[in-house]
Length: 458
Image (spheres, rainbow, N blue to C red):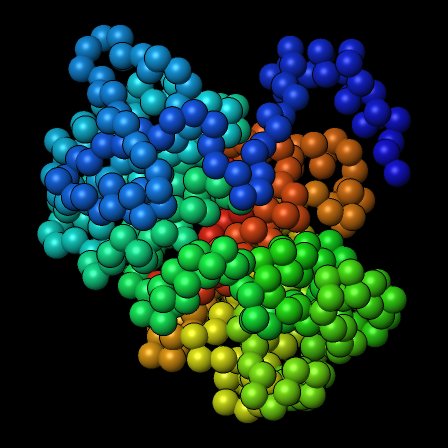
Protein backbone atom coordinates (compact mmCIF):
# COMPACT_ATOMS: atom_id res chain seq x y z
CA UNK A 1 0.00 0.00 0.00
CA UNK A 2 1.38 3.41 -1.03
CA UNK A 3 2.00 5.73 1.92
CA UNK A 4 0.82 9.34 2.02
CA UNK A 5 4.44 10.48 1.93
CA UNK A 6 5.10 8.44 -1.21
CA UNK A 7 1.95 9.77 -2.89
CA UNK A 8 3.07 13.33 -2.12
CA UNK A 9 6.60 12.69 -3.38
CA UNK A 10 5.41 11.33 -6.73
CA UNK A 11 2.73 14.00 -7.24
CA UNK A 12 3.45 16.80 -9.74
CA UNK A 13 4.35 19.35 -7.01
CA UNK A 14 6.44 16.74 -5.20
CA UNK A 15 8.39 15.87 -8.32
CA UNK A 16 8.99 19.55 -9.03
CA UNK A 17 10.55 19.97 -5.57
CA UNK A 18 12.46 16.69 -5.93
CA UNK A 19 13.97 17.89 -9.20
CA UNK A 20 15.24 21.07 -7.57
CA UNK A 21 16.77 18.94 -4.82
CA UNK A 22 18.69 16.89 -7.40
CA UNK A 23 16.23 13.97 -7.48
CA UNK A 24 14.64 14.22 -10.93
CA UNK A 25 12.06 11.74 -12.16
CA UNK A 26 13.97 8.64 -13.31
CA UNK A 27 14.39 7.97 -17.02
CA UNK A 28 12.12 5.28 -18.44
CA UNK A 29 14.51 2.52 -19.51
CA UNK A 30 14.28 0.66 -22.81
CA UNK A 31 13.54 -2.97 -21.99
CA UNK A 32 12.92 -6.22 -23.87
CA UNK A 33 14.33 -7.47 -27.17
CA UNK A 34 14.49 -3.94 -28.57
CA UNK A 35 17.56 -2.47 -30.27
CA UNK A 36 18.75 1.10 -29.57
CA UNK A 37 17.25 4.11 -31.31
CA UNK A 38 19.70 5.82 -33.61
CA UNK A 39 22.71 4.61 -35.58
CA UNK A 40 25.49 2.39 -34.23
CA UNK A 41 29.01 3.78 -34.57
CA UNK A 42 32.26 1.88 -34.10
CA UNK A 43 35.99 2.32 -33.89
CA UNK A 44 38.96 -0.05 -33.51
CA UNK A 45 41.91 1.21 -31.48
CA UNK A 46 44.36 -1.68 -31.64
CA UNK A 47 43.89 -2.95 -35.17
CA UNK A 48 41.41 -5.69 -34.19
CA UNK A 49 38.52 -6.51 -36.54
CA UNK A 50 36.64 -8.68 -34.03
CA UNK A 51 33.94 -6.13 -33.11
CA UNK A 52 33.28 -5.41 -36.78
CA UNK A 53 32.88 -9.14 -37.43
CA UNK A 54 30.38 -9.48 -34.57
CA UNK A 55 28.32 -6.57 -35.87
CA UNK A 56 28.36 -8.11 -39.33
CA UNK A 57 27.12 -11.43 -37.88
CA UNK A 58 24.28 -9.54 -36.20
CA UNK A 59 23.40 -7.69 -39.38
CA UNK A 60 24.25 -4.33 -37.79
CA UNK A 61 25.73 -1.70 -40.09
CA UNK A 62 28.02 0.62 -38.15
CA UNK A 63 29.31 4.03 -39.17
CA UNK A 64 32.76 5.27 -38.23
CA UNK A 65 32.89 6.88 -34.80
CA UNK A 66 33.87 10.53 -34.55
CA UNK A 67 37.16 11.29 -32.83
CA UNK A 68 37.92 14.27 -30.60
CA UNK A 69 41.07 16.11 -31.66
CA UNK A 70 40.52 19.61 -30.33
CA UNK A 71 39.02 21.79 -27.62
CA UNK A 72 35.44 21.17 -28.74
CA UNK A 73 34.53 17.60 -29.64
CA UNK A 74 32.91 17.05 -33.03
CA UNK A 75 29.15 16.57 -32.94
CA UNK A 76 27.19 13.73 -34.46
CA UNK A 77 24.46 14.90 -36.85
CA UNK A 78 21.88 12.96 -34.80
CA UNK A 79 21.63 11.09 -31.51
CA UNK A 80 23.48 7.79 -31.77
CA UNK A 81 22.08 4.55 -30.43
CA UNK A 82 25.38 2.91 -29.51
CA UNK A 83 29.15 3.23 -29.63
CA UNK A 84 31.27 0.09 -29.96
CA UNK A 85 34.98 0.42 -29.22
CA UNK A 86 37.26 -2.50 -30.07
CA UNK A 87 40.15 -1.91 -27.67
CA UNK A 88 41.81 -5.29 -28.16
CA UNK A 89 45.51 -4.93 -28.72
CA UNK A 90 45.98 -1.97 -26.36
CA UNK A 91 49.17 -2.48 -24.38
CA UNK A 92 50.62 0.97 -23.66
CA UNK A 93 49.35 3.90 -21.59
CA UNK A 94 49.42 6.44 -24.48
CA UNK A 95 47.00 4.20 -26.39
CA UNK A 96 44.28 4.99 -23.85
CA UNK A 97 44.07 8.44 -25.44
CA UNK A 98 42.28 6.80 -28.35
CA UNK A 99 39.52 5.67 -26.00
CA UNK A 100 39.11 9.16 -24.54
CA UNK A 101 38.97 10.63 -28.03
CA UNK A 102 36.24 8.20 -29.13
CA UNK A 103 34.19 8.46 -25.94
CA UNK A 104 34.05 12.25 -25.64
CA UNK A 105 31.92 12.97 -28.73
CA UNK A 106 29.76 9.86 -28.20
CA UNK A 107 28.89 10.52 -24.56
CA UNK A 108 27.43 13.90 -25.49
CA UNK A 109 25.42 12.41 -28.36
CA UNK A 110 23.97 9.17 -26.97
CA UNK A 111 20.24 8.67 -27.35
CA UNK A 112 18.07 7.76 -24.38
CA UNK A 113 18.92 4.23 -23.21
CA UNK A 114 21.94 4.33 -25.52
CA UNK A 115 24.76 1.83 -25.24
CA UNK A 116 28.55 1.88 -25.04
CA UNK A 117 30.20 -1.52 -25.53
CA UNK A 118 33.94 -1.85 -24.97
CA UNK A 119 35.90 -4.90 -26.11
CA UNK A 120 39.31 -5.78 -24.59
CA UNK A 121 41.76 -8.65 -24.20
CA UNK A 122 41.25 -10.89 -21.18
CA UNK A 123 44.88 -12.04 -21.15
CA UNK A 124 47.88 -9.79 -21.76
CA UNK A 125 51.60 -10.02 -21.01
CA UNK A 126 53.67 -7.47 -19.13
CA UNK A 127 53.16 -5.02 -16.29
CA UNK A 128 52.18 -2.03 -18.41
CA UNK A 129 49.82 -4.09 -20.55
CA UNK A 130 48.04 -5.38 -17.45
CA UNK A 131 47.87 -1.86 -16.05
CA UNK A 132 46.22 -0.71 -19.27
CA UNK A 133 43.85 -3.68 -19.21
CA UNK A 134 42.70 -2.73 -15.71
CA UNK A 135 42.63 0.93 -16.68
CA UNK A 136 39.95 0.13 -19.22
CA UNK A 137 37.79 -1.19 -16.38
CA UNK A 138 38.27 2.03 -14.44
CA UNK A 139 37.25 4.11 -17.46
CA UNK A 140 34.20 1.92 -18.06
CA UNK A 141 32.99 2.25 -14.46
CA UNK A 142 33.54 6.00 -14.45
CA UNK A 143 31.75 6.63 -17.72
CA UNK A 144 28.84 4.60 -16.37
CA UNK A 145 28.50 7.15 -13.59
CA UNK A 146 28.63 10.08 -16.02
CA UNK A 147 26.10 8.90 -18.61
CA UNK A 148 22.57 10.25 -18.51
CA UNK A 149 19.10 9.42 -19.86
CA UNK A 150 19.31 5.72 -19.06
CA UNK A 151 22.41 5.08 -21.18
CA UNK A 152 24.79 2.32 -20.06
CA UNK A 153 28.34 1.19 -20.68
CA UNK A 154 29.85 -2.27 -20.24
CA UNK A 155 33.20 -3.93 -20.91
CA UNK A 156 33.65 -7.38 -22.41
CA UNK A 157 36.99 -9.10 -21.95
CA UNK A 158 37.74 -11.66 -24.67
CA UNK A 159 39.77 -14.82 -24.12
CA UNK A 160 42.55 -15.30 -26.71
CA UNK A 161 40.70 -18.00 -28.66
CA UNK A 162 37.44 -16.03 -29.05
CA UNK A 163 35.96 -15.52 -32.52
CA UNK A 164 33.00 -13.41 -33.64
CA UNK A 165 30.43 -16.21 -33.25
CA UNK A 166 31.34 -16.51 -29.55
CA UNK A 167 30.26 -12.91 -28.93
CA UNK A 168 26.93 -12.82 -30.78
CA UNK A 169 24.77 -13.61 -27.73
CA UNK A 170 26.72 -11.13 -25.58
CA UNK A 171 26.45 -8.26 -28.05
CA UNK A 172 22.76 -9.01 -28.60
CA UNK A 173 22.16 -8.85 -24.85
CA UNK A 174 24.11 -5.61 -24.44
CA UNK A 175 22.53 -3.83 -27.40
CA UNK A 176 18.99 -4.79 -26.51
CA UNK A 177 16.80 -3.57 -23.68
CA UNK A 178 17.40 -6.88 -21.91
CA UNK A 179 20.52 -5.29 -20.36
CA UNK A 180 18.67 -2.16 -19.16
CA UNK A 181 19.87 -2.39 -15.54
CA UNK A 182 23.38 -3.75 -16.24
CA UNK A 183 25.75 -0.80 -16.17
CA UNK A 184 29.46 -0.22 -15.58
CA UNK A 185 30.12 -3.96 -15.46
CA UNK A 186 32.83 -6.14 -16.98
CA UNK A 187 33.00 -9.88 -17.58
CA UNK A 188 34.91 -12.38 -19.66
CA UNK A 189 33.77 -14.40 -22.67
CA UNK A 190 35.63 -17.49 -23.79
CA UNK A 191 35.21 -19.79 -26.79
CA UNK A 192 31.79 -21.36 -27.28
CA UNK A 193 31.34 -25.05 -27.99
CA UNK A 194 30.70 -25.94 -31.61
CA UNK A 195 27.38 -27.54 -30.78
CA UNK A 196 26.16 -24.37 -29.10
CA UNK A 197 27.01 -22.19 -32.09
CA UNK A 198 25.43 -24.65 -34.51
CA UNK A 199 22.32 -24.87 -32.35
CA UNK A 200 21.96 -21.09 -32.19
CA UNK A 201 22.58 -20.67 -35.92
CA UNK A 202 19.92 -23.28 -36.66
CA UNK A 203 17.53 -21.57 -34.23
CA UNK A 204 18.06 -18.20 -35.90
CA UNK A 205 17.67 -19.60 -39.41
CA UNK A 206 14.35 -21.20 -38.49
CA UNK A 207 13.14 -18.24 -36.46
CA UNK A 208 12.72 -20.42 -33.38
CA UNK A 209 13.38 -19.11 -29.85
CA UNK A 210 16.75 -19.98 -28.28
CA UNK A 211 15.37 -22.30 -25.58
CA UNK A 212 12.94 -24.24 -27.75
CA UNK A 213 12.67 -27.93 -26.74
CA UNK A 214 14.71 -27.30 -23.58
CA UNK A 215 13.75 -27.76 -19.92
CA UNK A 216 14.51 -24.98 -17.46
CA UNK A 217 13.99 -25.41 -13.70
CA UNK A 218 13.48 -22.36 -11.50
CA UNK A 219 13.37 -22.57 -7.70
CA UNK A 220 11.45 -19.96 -5.73
CA UNK A 221 9.24 -19.58 -8.81
CA UNK A 222 5.90 -18.86 -7.13
CA UNK A 223 6.30 -15.09 -7.11
CA UNK A 224 8.58 -12.09 -7.59
CA UNK A 225 11.88 -12.53 -9.35
CA UNK A 226 11.46 -16.31 -9.60
CA UNK A 227 8.12 -16.01 -11.41
CA UNK A 228 9.67 -13.51 -13.79
CA UNK A 229 12.64 -15.80 -14.50
CA UNK A 230 10.24 -18.61 -15.36
CA UNK A 231 8.22 -16.24 -17.56
CA UNK A 232 11.26 -15.12 -19.54
CA UNK A 233 12.46 -18.71 -19.96
CA UNK A 234 9.03 -19.67 -21.30
CA UNK A 235 9.01 -16.66 -23.61
CA UNK A 236 12.33 -17.87 -24.99
CA UNK A 237 10.82 -21.26 -25.76
CA UNK A 238 11.64 -23.33 -22.66
CA UNK A 239 9.46 -25.87 -20.92
CA UNK A 240 9.58 -24.62 -17.34
CA UNK A 241 9.52 -26.59 -14.10
CA UNK A 242 8.44 -24.21 -11.34
CA UNK A 243 9.65 -25.17 -7.86
CA UNK A 244 8.67 -23.68 -4.52
CA UNK A 245 7.72 -24.65 -0.98
CA UNK A 246 4.34 -26.36 -0.33
CA UNK A 247 2.89 -23.29 1.41
CA UNK A 248 3.22 -21.43 -1.93
CA UNK A 249 1.45 -24.24 -3.76
CA UNK A 250 -1.51 -22.23 -5.05
CA UNK A 251 0.52 -19.41 -6.60
CA UNK A 252 3.09 -21.94 -7.83
CA UNK A 253 0.44 -23.90 -9.69
CA UNK A 254 -0.95 -20.68 -11.16
CA UNK A 255 2.38 -19.56 -12.65
CA UNK A 256 3.16 -23.08 -13.94
CA UNK A 257 -0.23 -23.36 -15.61
CA UNK A 258 0.06 -19.89 -17.08
CA UNK A 259 3.41 -20.81 -18.67
CA UNK A 260 2.42 -24.31 -19.77
CA UNK A 261 4.97 -25.90 -17.45
CA UNK A 262 4.78 -28.09 -14.38
CA UNK A 263 4.83 -27.30 -10.68
CA UNK A 264 6.86 -29.13 -8.05
CA UNK A 265 6.22 -28.42 -4.38
CA UNK A 266 9.60 -29.00 -2.78
CA UNK A 267 11.58 -27.82 0.23
CA UNK A 268 15.02 -27.43 -1.36
CA UNK A 269 16.70 -27.89 2.03
CA UNK A 270 15.44 -31.49 2.24
CA UNK A 271 18.31 -34.01 2.02
CA UNK A 272 16.72 -35.69 -1.02
CA UNK A 273 15.72 -32.47 -2.85
CA UNK A 274 18.03 -33.13 -5.80
CA UNK A 275 16.77 -36.69 -6.22
CA UNK A 276 13.13 -35.59 -6.08
CA UNK A 277 13.69 -32.86 -8.64
CA UNK A 278 15.40 -35.21 -11.11
CA UNK A 279 12.65 -37.80 -10.58
CA UNK A 280 9.98 -35.20 -11.34
CA UNK A 281 11.67 -34.26 -14.64
CA UNK A 282 12.16 -37.91 -15.66
CA UNK A 283 8.60 -38.84 -14.73
CA UNK A 284 6.90 -35.91 -16.43
CA UNK A 285 9.09 -35.64 -19.52
CA UNK A 286 10.53 -39.15 -20.00
CA UNK A 287 13.61 -41.10 -18.96
CA UNK A 288 15.70 -39.43 -21.64
CA UNK A 289 14.74 -35.92 -20.51
CA UNK A 290 17.47 -33.72 -19.15
CA UNK A 291 17.49 -30.24 -17.63
CA UNK A 292 19.07 -27.58 -19.83
CA UNK A 293 19.00 -24.80 -17.23
CA UNK A 294 18.95 -25.11 -13.44
CA UNK A 295 18.24 -21.70 -11.92
CA UNK A 296 18.85 -21.56 -8.16
CA UNK A 297 16.70 -18.56 -7.34
CA UNK A 298 15.10 -19.53 -3.99
CA UNK A 299 16.36 -17.42 -1.12
CA UNK A 300 15.37 -15.90 2.20
CA UNK A 301 16.47 -13.09 4.51
CA UNK A 302 16.54 -13.04 8.30
CA UNK A 303 18.04 -9.59 8.83
CA UNK A 304 19.47 -8.55 12.17
CA UNK A 305 22.66 -6.89 13.32
CA UNK A 306 25.24 -9.57 13.95
CA UNK A 307 25.11 -9.00 17.70
CA UNK A 308 21.38 -9.83 17.57
CA UNK A 309 21.63 -12.81 15.20
CA UNK A 310 21.07 -16.15 16.87
CA UNK A 311 22.17 -19.55 15.55
CA UNK A 312 18.73 -20.34 14.09
CA UNK A 313 18.58 -17.19 11.96
CA UNK A 314 22.15 -17.79 10.85
CA UNK A 315 21.59 -21.40 9.84
CA UNK A 316 18.26 -20.84 8.06
CA UNK A 317 19.72 -18.33 5.63
CA UNK A 318 22.86 -20.32 4.87
CA UNK A 319 20.83 -23.50 4.38
CA UNK A 320 18.35 -22.07 1.89
CA UNK A 321 20.62 -19.66 0.04
CA UNK A 322 23.79 -21.75 -0.25
CA UNK A 323 23.96 -25.21 1.33
CA UNK A 324 20.88 -26.49 -0.55
CA UNK A 325 22.54 -25.71 -3.88
CA UNK A 326 25.74 -27.45 -2.85
CA UNK A 327 23.76 -30.59 -2.01
CA UNK A 328 21.56 -30.54 -5.11
CA UNK A 329 24.19 -29.82 -7.75
CA UNK A 330 26.20 -33.07 -7.41
CA UNK A 331 22.99 -35.08 -7.72
CA UNK A 332 21.91 -33.22 -10.85
CA UNK A 333 25.41 -33.57 -12.31
CA UNK A 334 25.81 -37.33 -11.84
CA UNK A 335 24.23 -38.29 -15.16
CA UNK A 336 20.94 -39.68 -13.83
CA UNK A 337 17.63 -39.41 -15.76
CA UNK A 338 16.14 -35.97 -15.21
CA UNK A 339 19.50 -34.48 -14.22
CA UNK A 340 21.46 -31.71 -15.90
CA UNK A 341 22.29 -32.19 -19.57
CA UNK A 342 25.76 -32.04 -21.02
CA UNK A 343 26.11 -28.46 -22.33
CA UNK A 344 23.64 -27.46 -19.61
CA UNK A 345 23.48 -24.30 -17.53
CA UNK A 346 23.74 -23.74 -13.78
CA UNK A 347 22.70 -20.23 -12.74
CA UNK A 348 22.55 -18.89 -9.18
CA UNK A 349 21.43 -15.67 -7.57
CA UNK A 350 24.14 -13.83 -5.66
CA UNK A 351 23.68 -10.24 -4.42
CA UNK A 352 25.50 -6.94 -4.16
CA UNK A 353 25.25 -7.56 -0.41
CA UNK A 354 27.56 -10.53 -0.88
CA UNK A 355 30.03 -8.39 -2.84
CA UNK A 356 30.00 -5.23 -0.74
CA UNK A 357 28.45 -6.33 2.55
CA UNK A 358 25.36 -4.73 4.03
CA UNK A 359 24.55 -3.64 7.56
CA UNK A 360 22.31 -6.15 9.32
CA UNK A 361 22.86 -8.86 6.72
CA UNK A 362 25.93 -10.79 7.84
CA UNK A 363 24.15 -14.13 7.33
CA UNK A 364 22.72 -13.11 3.94
CA UNK A 365 26.03 -11.61 2.78
CA UNK A 366 27.85 -14.79 3.78
CA UNK A 367 25.43 -16.92 1.77
CA UNK A 368 25.57 -14.72 -1.31
CA UNK A 369 29.33 -14.32 -1.20
CA UNK A 370 29.42 -18.09 -0.89
CA UNK A 371 27.44 -18.33 -4.13
CA UNK A 372 30.14 -16.26 -5.86
CA UNK A 373 32.81 -18.59 -4.51
CA UNK A 374 30.84 -21.65 -5.62
CA UNK A 375 30.46 -20.31 -9.16
CA UNK A 376 34.14 -19.52 -9.53
CA UNK A 377 35.20 -22.88 -8.13
CA UNK A 378 32.71 -25.10 -9.97
CA UNK A 379 32.91 -23.48 -13.42
CA UNK A 380 36.37 -24.77 -14.41
CA UNK A 381 35.47 -28.27 -13.22
CA UNK A 382 32.61 -28.48 -15.72
CA UNK A 383 34.17 -26.85 -18.78
CA UNK A 384 34.99 -30.20 -20.41
CA UNK A 385 31.30 -31.16 -20.20
CA UNK A 386 30.22 -27.90 -21.84
CA UNK A 387 28.31 -26.94 -18.69
CA UNK A 388 28.45 -23.29 -17.69
CA UNK A 389 28.14 -21.95 -14.14
CA UNK A 390 27.30 -18.28 -13.59
CA UNK A 391 25.53 -15.96 -11.17
CA UNK A 392 23.54 -12.76 -11.24
CA UNK A 393 24.05 -10.29 -8.38
CA UNK A 394 20.98 -8.03 -8.11
CA UNK A 395 21.07 -4.67 -6.42
CA UNK A 396 17.89 -2.87 -5.39
CA UNK A 397 15.02 -4.54 -7.27
CA UNK A 398 11.40 -3.42 -6.93
CA UNK A 399 9.58 -6.42 -5.39
CA UNK A 400 6.91 -7.02 -2.78
CA UNK A 401 9.72 -7.52 -0.26
CA UNK A 402 11.45 -4.19 -0.99
CA UNK A 403 8.06 -2.43 -1.00
CA UNK A 404 7.92 -3.07 2.75
CA UNK A 405 11.02 -0.95 3.36
CA UNK A 406 10.15 2.52 4.79
CA UNK A 407 9.68 5.03 1.97
CA UNK A 408 12.62 7.37 2.64
CA UNK A 409 15.05 4.47 3.07
CA UNK A 410 13.63 2.81 -0.03
CA UNK A 411 14.04 5.99 -2.07
CA UNK A 412 17.69 6.23 -1.00
CA UNK A 413 18.27 2.65 -2.13
CA UNK A 414 16.60 3.43 -5.46
CA UNK A 415 18.69 6.51 -6.12
CA UNK A 416 22.16 5.32 -5.14
CA UNK A 417 23.09 3.91 -8.53
CA UNK A 418 24.12 5.39 -11.85
CA UNK A 419 20.63 5.02 -13.36
CA UNK A 420 18.92 6.74 -10.42
CA UNK A 421 16.16 4.16 -9.94
CA UNK A 422 15.41 0.66 -8.77
CA UNK A 423 15.52 -2.28 -11.13
CA UNK A 424 12.64 -4.57 -12.03
CA UNK A 425 12.45 -8.36 -11.68
CA UNK A 426 12.53 -8.57 -15.49
CA UNK A 427 16.06 -7.12 -15.40
CA UNK A 428 17.33 -10.04 -13.34
CA UNK A 429 15.38 -12.51 -15.47
CA UNK A 430 16.76 -11.16 -18.76
CA UNK A 431 20.34 -11.50 -17.55
CA UNK A 432 19.64 -15.08 -16.54
CA UNK A 433 18.12 -15.58 -19.99
CA UNK A 434 21.43 -14.45 -21.47
CA UNK A 435 23.26 -17.08 -19.42
CA UNK A 436 20.74 -19.77 -20.45
CA UNK A 437 21.10 -19.07 -24.18
CA UNK A 438 22.84 -22.01 -25.91
CA UNK A 439 25.04 -19.48 -27.73
CA UNK A 440 26.41 -18.23 -24.37
CA UNK A 441 28.45 -21.37 -23.75
CA UNK A 442 31.64 -19.30 -23.69
CA UNK A 443 30.37 -17.38 -20.66
CA UNK A 444 31.19 -19.30 -17.49
CA UNK A 445 32.50 -18.53 -14.02
CA UNK A 446 31.07 -15.01 -14.29
CA UNK A 447 29.08 -12.89 -11.84
CA UNK A 448 27.16 -10.04 -13.44
CA UNK A 449 25.73 -7.34 -11.21
CA UNK A 450 22.22 -6.26 -12.16
CA UNK A 451 22.23 -3.13 -10.06
CA UNK A 452 22.29 -0.06 -12.31
CA UNK A 453 25.90 0.32 -11.15
CA UNK A 454 25.04 0.57 -7.50
CA UNK A 455 27.47 2.91 -5.78
CA UNK A 456 28.73 0.26 -3.38
CA UNK A 457 31.01 -2.68 -3.89
CA UNK A 458 33.43 -3.57 -6.65
